[in-house]
Each structure stands twice: as structure tokens, then as C-alpha cells.
Image 1: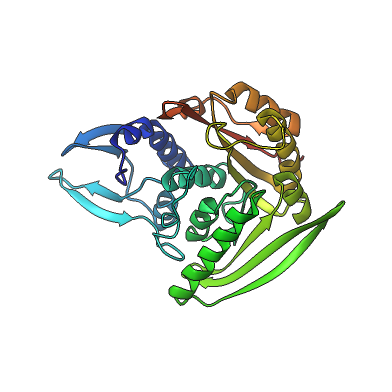
Image 2: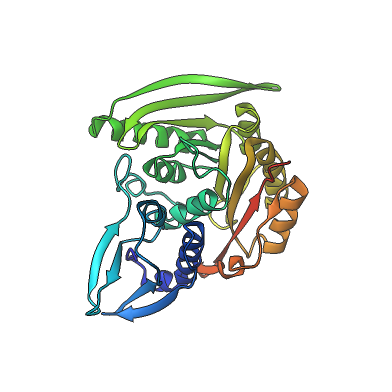
Length: 324
């Protein structure tokens, strides 16, 4: 697995990596039995299967913690098969911007992979991902590198502008062919400013949209069924909160209602949150109230992990049924 700078955190998220690999194996039509072994002081995730097809290998490349996939030969030597898939723009895209409250890039990729994996749109080209509280755009940047088009909204226009400026500079320095257009989307009582990027990447033509405004209003401004999935790292209630006197529960409930219309039938919403400020069962209840079907059991109860003293994070996944 890809090494993490914080060894304690790396141990804490090991069950997430196991769950993700089991889920990918099942999606690839392979046995989902995963065993953790240690070698040379490193934890390795292992599984048994027949030789991988190209399609199966392409799916396993999505694993957010993948450094290298190797096969054991008859002499128990590890023979490299493949590494992480080629980034559409650059592996460093999501990690350059540093700011308070930023979500770890590897964990962000994990959330994106869940949204991609458990929805019904894996063959969609391009896959469109929406983050309604995107900050400076980490989720958008990781989605772009995976070959997905990205839409992000944030109520803090200064953060959003910084993310858009960074992407512009990155594209210019990398000499990627791109265009930028300023526009707006109309909502009842006003409009939502929008910065639209179109770019040519190693994964083909992609788009990125930065919307300045409230999460629910931005979702409504984009119209119905405009994305295949939504990923959001909710405010932890420590460094940052929802503001405007609105409780985190009310904010989450309101945003989920808007997201149900935003996501195409068969798509997923993936939320991460601090269990000290939001309870998992409460999040599942809000998902159900909004119309989503929470995905529970079968490993979904192993995703809670400690980030730091005041943050124990969990992940909830909800799916919009095809007939909803």
C-alpha cells in the first residue's frame, strides 16, 4: 500500500483499505477474501485468484491506497504486475495546496472510489462527481486525476477562488490545453457564480466547475440529475462549522434533500463526518428521509477510525434507487 506520513493513522485506516479491496474484487468478479500479512515491516493486502484480465486489473487500479500489485511466483517471489493508474493531470495535483481543515488526499480518493464502486454508472464517460462543500478543491482534483469531471461548491468564495486559481496555474505550468469561462446559474432570489474549466488530459477531455454559494443552492442551480455521485467531507465542528447559526444536523438534512435531486438514479452519496458531532445512525436516518437507501452491513461498519484526539471519523454511503 501507498505509505502514509503518519504511521498511527496508517494503521487506523487499514480496515478501510481491506474493505475497499474486498469491494473491488467482488466488482471484478473475483473472490473477495482479503488477508493482511506483514513483510519487511510493511502491511500487505493479499488475495488469491486466477491471472487477472485487463478489465480486472483496470478496476483494481482504482484502489486509493495502491502502490503496487504483485503476484507471487512458484518461488514465493513478488513479481510486479501494475501500479496506480496514470493520473490524468499529475499525481501531485491534490497535495500541493496546504490549508487548515484539508482532507487527506488518500482518504479523499477512498471516498471517491466508494462513490464510483457502489453506484450503477461505472461505465459512464465521463463520470461526473459533485462535492457540495469542496473548500479549495481537493476532492475535485483527485476526481480529475481519476479521469472524472468534477463540480464543486463552497460557501466560502475566497477558498473557492483560491482553488480555481491554483488549477489555472497548474494547467498553465503543465502546458495542458484548456479554456476558462466565467458564468452564473440562476436560482430563486439570485444567482450562483460559476467558473468553468474545459481541459485536455491524459484521460481525454474533462471539465471542472467551481460554484460559489451554499451547498443546497448550488446543487439546485445545476439542475436535476447532473452528477453520477456526490462525495462530501462534512464539517467536523472543530476548526470549522456550518455557520449562520444553522446546526450541523439541519445543514446535513437540507443538503441531502438537494443532493437527492442532483444525483442520477442509481448513483451514490458518500459522506464522511466526525462522530463526536454527528452520529452514524443519525446520518443514515437523514439519508433515508431524503430518499436514499443507506448501505449497511457487509463491512460498512468497519469504516470508523481515529484521526486525532477530537475526531473519530466514520463514512456513510447512500444510494438513489433506479426507480426513485
